[in-house]
Every structure is written in C-alpha cells, then in structure tokens.
Image (cartoon, rainbow, N blue to C red):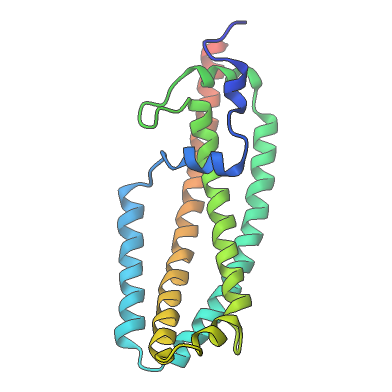
Length: 203
C-alpha cells in the first residue's frame, strides 16, 4: 500500500529533545493555564506575605521536594508501563492511516500528535523529577546552595528569595503534574475511541 509520506517521516526525531521541541506545539487548555497561575499566585502570596517564619517554608520545600520526587518517579513508571502496553496493542495499519492525516491546530500528523501528547507528559515528569532531585541534593542543610549563598554579602535576602521561590515552584509543580495526569487519562480515552471508530468504518 502506498502512502503520501515517506518512511523516514516516521523516524525524523533523533532524540527526546527533538520530540520535546515538536510537542511544544501542543498547547495546554485555558483552564490548565488559569488554574495553575491561580495556584502559583496563592502559594507566592502565602510564602512572600502571609508566612513570617522562614524556617517553616524551608521545611515545606525540603519535605515537598522529597514527596514530589517519589510521587513523580512512581507515577512515571506506571505511565510508561501503561503506554507500552497501549502502543503494543495498537494496530499498525490504523497508525499509518493516522500518519496520513494532519492535525489542523499543530500542523503535525495525527499519529505524531497523539504520541506527542503522551511524550509531553513523560518529559514533564522527568524534568520535574530532576528539579526535585536537585533541591533534595543541593538544598539540604549546609548543602551546596546554602554554602554558595553564604559567600554573598546579602545572603539573608538571597536565601529568603530562593526559599520562597522554591516553595512556590514546587507547590505549583504538584498541581501541574496532576493536570498532566488528567490529560493523559483523557488522551487514552480519546485515542481508544478513535481506534474503535476506525474499526467501525473498516468493518
């Protein structure tokens, strides 16, 4: 069977970075953006204005980063396992047919669009897990960050800004990961329904 695309179009991406660059065309929903901004605003207001005890904020940063790392790594394992099973059971003929169709919003082939929605979730979980890990390793008491900040004359101000910013980012990242998880579940549902539609018309 002949197709309008070449076989090399299926393997244009040579690294995860290539996948990430293309997946950026898939924009989040307005609800996700607004909700995440509201969470960031609330956490920032709490850290910079409402909480007086900086030690409490620092304790939350370290505790949240450890919890977030465990959560993201564990969830990522389940997501990859589920995606692997899902991709294995998918019919090659239908996926090649999806490659023929172009998604109007992104300009990507529908096959790539569907898979990039999953890859975008995986990449986000990996990147945020690395962020949590760096906070755990470098942000411990008498750790690298604390020792570097101590070299500056206005160390208390820098330390305060770093702690409160980390508090805001880590707390917001939890919400972001959960929103991605929600999107991941819906994308599986949508793609399965498309598979069934294809089978319906083929049958």
